Image 1 (cartoon, rainbow, N blue to C red):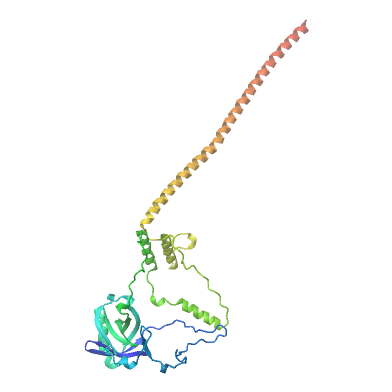
Image 2 (image 1 turned 135 degrees about the horizontal axis):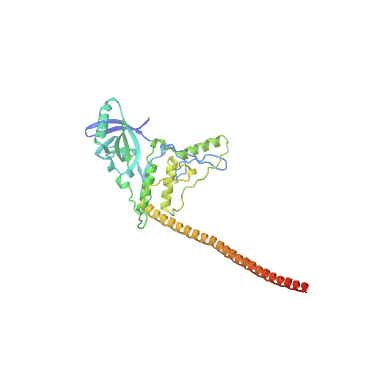
Length: 357
């Protein structure tokens, strides 16, 4: 890797010649500006506003603009004469625990490489001292025309340096926190803990830039003349969260499903959620609702039974009444028959008397 700065680490009276190498690289896809009418490239030219002529890089210097707009020229020679002890030196000023460094101060990252064979021994000494102490080194250094703050730590077998912002460059978070008093219930915290446990850890090396890959595929497709299909727009979940508990529960279930911990969709079972205080209330309410439903079902069954038995009773009464009527008819018929029989006998007797006479 190409070094961007050569100097030395000042460790007390020990001087360690090093090379500064960029530890990161930018993979962003850069676009050019073009004229939409003909596709011509749009370029920026450096033009002097006094004579309106384009100037080259060798004719350009630097100046400080005063409050009234006056330009005060500053040359490289002027800056070189300043008493800057860190111009070519990374000067270690203290060793502190790593948690003393606010992550908000983190800036660019570099690798420090030992410059030459003589630098190997003191370089290794500093590296092992940092490892054994479990501390980081706070240092000052100068780069690109200004003095900076840095933090030295060990990465594998290499000393890395993180550029730090000066403390007065960190803005206070005034007016950023939510307005008003917001109360978070234990049930919500329990579900948030369940979601954190379900998501678990991740292999940082497995993370990649999906958007950059999509842009590269788009460029390749357009370059080959293929038709670019618009991507399906998914639900980004940017709407208002009406029910925080429901949103957390759904998040836990979705996370478990994505990790293969939930049951199949066909069995209709929901993903397990850690028990929370809210659940007991819901469970008792559900039990009460179930009891009410059972009572309603029993009452309905009784009504149904009584309504079904009532017609049967009426039918029995009708049958009894009909039987009584039939019996009465039979009795009347017998009476008529008996009365008819008596009169016939009398007529026969009288006929016999007449015949004998």
